[in-house]
Amino acid sequence: MTDKQIGDKVKAHYKSGTYLGKIVEDRGDKYLVEVLAVVKHPLQGDLHNPNQTEGVFFHERKALAFHEKMNVKKPAVHAFESDIPEYKISLQEAVHKYKEKLLQEDTAYNREALLAIERLEKEYA
Image (cartoon, rainbow, N blue to C red):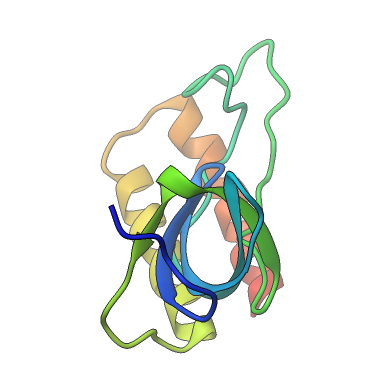
């Protein structure tokens, strides 16, 4: 396995989202990664009780911001060779994909998550 270097473009899974960015620091078992684009928007709701709305605190989770830094465990960081899209466009696409997924099935969770992502979408604009 080849170690990644500072400045390398990467795809990183962080909490429930996926981002494109570049490594800015090696921190032993983690990399400090600067966010440059969003691939998958973070999930809404309680991550410890997925797909539930009753008896849980339903979290509204924003995507990490452009140039925000994240500490990511090395196994969750993968080399990325393609061009990195513009942040705002990537965020819009990630929100759109998430909304499409939520609209595929009418459940209490999907309705609540859709409301949360639509609130965030307005905030992002």
